[in-house]
Length: 228
Image (tube, rainbow, N blue to C red; front, side, top):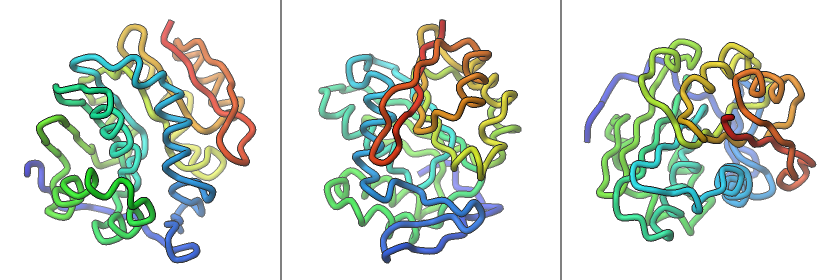
């Protein structure tokens, strides 16, 4: 396990119905109240045309690591697609969740328990780089407005999963969306649960061809796009 580091700030939570973590800092739940795993699959996996675009060396990047559910769902899909090389995954998180809270949140999805276990073991040990035979993941802790510009990578697919733009506007600013564009590979894509007009305009300005599509659950719309 590599990359152990002292966590400067942790997520502050309360629990809804005993199972759904809600950020008290942003007053927003970490996943859909009507099915977090189904939402991840609809928004981030289907929204980025996965698994059809998987290839050796495929790199997912994410704003907002949260419970780690998106990483776990992507790894499950990677394995189901028969990929044998490591999935590359980089996530930017300002307020990482404490390991016991992450385990409690993921317990709501027993179907992911086997895949989640080694990831939770690394996280519990303080590692922010997670290496498995078919996964190379890094969670970069800090304000994405500082850490993303300093990142040397380029993603094939972005999961834009910060808290609501109305409650966490810093993670959806025009400047940060421009950085997302700068750190996207040719032909790369993004998907996000929000269809807020200012977010779509910022992503279009960053170079994406943006479309609004059907959202998950009670959300009528979401946004997705491809780098032009």
